[in-house]
Amino acid sequence: MAKKSQTDGRKVVSRNRRARHDYDLEATYDAGLVLMGSEIKSIRDNKVNLTDGFIQERDGELWLMNAHIAPYDKAPIYGHTDPRRPRKLLLHRKEISQIMTRIRERSYTAVPLTLYLERGLAKVEIAIARGKKQYDKRAAIAERDANRAIQRALKER
Image (cartoon, rainbow, N blue to C red; front, top):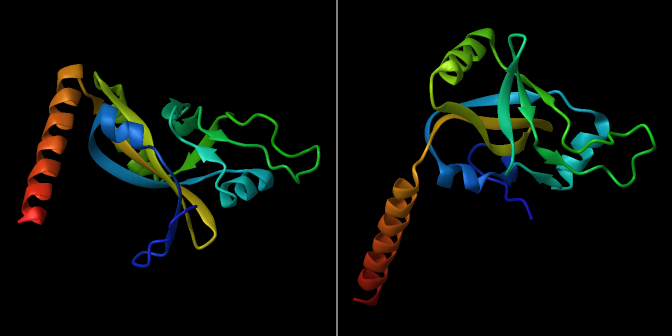
């Protein structure tokens, strides 16, 4: 079930929790998506998976690649048939150029973090990220476990 945040009017449909584990996130951007009618209906039914998704640059535009939006069951034959088709991202020209310059740098990538509905429109939050090394992931897990143990000890007092 998707949660609706009361503060900003967003209904979060899907989160990419794997991205927060695998990458150090630096800058985030909100982008619109160019979708077909059956895709927005699937998004409203929470049938989305961003885990394998990434952002790619093509001809001066940014595209959401490999994000899975399930075909809508009640759609006629001309609904979307490829659940992992590329989807164009809608951003301001200045934001696109900022993202593309960072992506072209070594070891930076752009990953989708959250897909949400805002006033009926589907939007995706993307982040510029740098991949973590295995020892960084272990350190983050150890730090999280230590904080959890501290909180548990304080709660018992």
